[in-house]
Image (cartoon, rainbow over all chains, first blue to last red; front, side, top):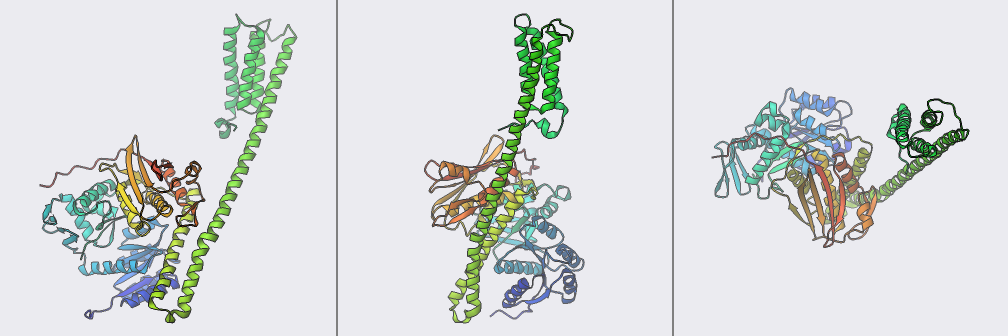
Amino acid sequence: MAEPRPRPTILVVEDEPEIRRFLRAAFGVEGYRVAESATGRRGSIDAATHKPDLAIVDLGLPDVDGIEVIRRIREWSPMPIIVLSARVHERAKIEALDSGADDYVTKPFAVGELLARVRAALRHAVRAGSGASILRFGPATVDLERRIARRGEAEVRLTPIEFRLLAALAKHLGMVVTHRHLLTQVWGPTHAGDTHYLRIYMKQLREKLEADPVRPRYLVTETGVGYRLLADE
Amino acid sequence: MVRYSPAMDLGRWWVGYAWAAGATLACTLAGVAMRPRFDLVNIAMVYLLAVVVVALRFPRGPAIAAAVLGVLAFDFLFVPPQGTLTVDDVQYLLTFVIMLAVALVISRLVESVRRQAAAQAALQVEAETERIRSALLASISHDLRTPLAVMAGASSSLADSGERLSATERHALAQSVFDQAREMSEHVAKVLQMTRLETGAIRVERDWAALGEIVGSVLARLAERLAEHRVIVELPDDLPLVRVDATLIEQALGNLLENSAKHTPPGTVVRIRAQRREGELVVTVEDYSGGLSDGELERVFAKFHRGTVEGGGTDIGLGLAICRAIVRLHGGRAWAERVPAGGTAFRFTLPLEQAPAVPPEPAPD
């Protein structure tokens, strides 16, 4: 038996009642409490009154732009926000992430995928931005604090930039991080558009840490958006 | 096939007249050179040639201008008495009339051929539109109705008699609703994507991308679909970066892989390769079963080309057409070739640009 803990509350801001219905069912079964808002305006208000642990915001709301809802929540709360986006809106995803959303799921999605994102985001909130300091990738481990990387018994030499890049990704472990954010964090704001830096360094990191660099399990590409760092618990 | 002069399309009417003047001048120079050794009749023929050329390329106005200028120049410079417009021998009047008549007749012929060609082209466009429309309808009725029927049937069983079904049966029915829904969603996405590509509603957002990463993310996305094939990736280690819309190229490559997986038996190999060639990157998806006829090699990339699916049935070809449209947007080409041992190689190219340098970092000690 898992020890009793407070049930996290999830706010769902989504105009389609049928989508709210299955989300309510799926989250209920997993032991979450669910609050629902059918409009963006309601969503901003409900976020303030219910103080949920996490918000799920549909980008295609009829009244206000989902991105506006994210901005309003971000004005006062660091709660994790996951965006539901239609496939056509590649740009909207990036804009939502740059406006403060933590992750996205593309419609139509399998509930399992959304639940996994929600769990990752809640864990991240618990760590409160300190980030994980020891990462496990199968046979490889990286200690970000002491700056030591190993693969099996052998030490793997990472450059200072490779460590910084891993640390920037680890701060959002399990969640997507945009190119712009990574470039700004690692190389500085003047290099926010230099995506080719990332391509080169991610390749190096994969070659050093992944079993099969072409099919990465831990340093995952989110095409057109950014990267996601996964690690074994 | 009639060649339209680009000048006409741009509506620069004076270009034709400039041609008329230029052609007359050229004939005059030729005539002066010919004069010592040739009869006047032959020089008249040279002018006639100029009239024919201008009449073929331009509308009636310039053609008449060429005829009139030719007559004037010929008369003034060559017909005795030279240096005047008077004509001693009446037979030259006939020459003038013939030149004018030739100009008019040819302009008229060309005009009517042009009109017929335009009508023909319009008909062809109409036929193609009609073909696509009916293929689209067929696609909607076949490729969407079947999954809808499955979804309606499976979900109504669950709703009506879910409690009397075993857990395994309930799960199987629910799973099939999910699978069919996802299939349908992919299908609708392809139809929408093709429409957007056709209407130019797609903005290509180019940025530096690594083909290796694109391959990795497409293999992750299609893991289930490719599960029954052996996918081999052969990428050279020093592959240069490409400046592309990675999302679109991921789709293009994904469509090729889906196509190969769908049309070859389980257990066979699908190979992804990339090669650097003069100024471009050649990306290949190869499969090793069946193979296409010459005609099919040409047609597979066409919209709504129906292919037979391994294990029976057909599917509408949108995937490869989307692939080609995306590759063309990037300035590349897409085509299919036979693999000597049997099978098909689907290739596309991406133009290479010099990637900016990444500042070097000292190697870790």
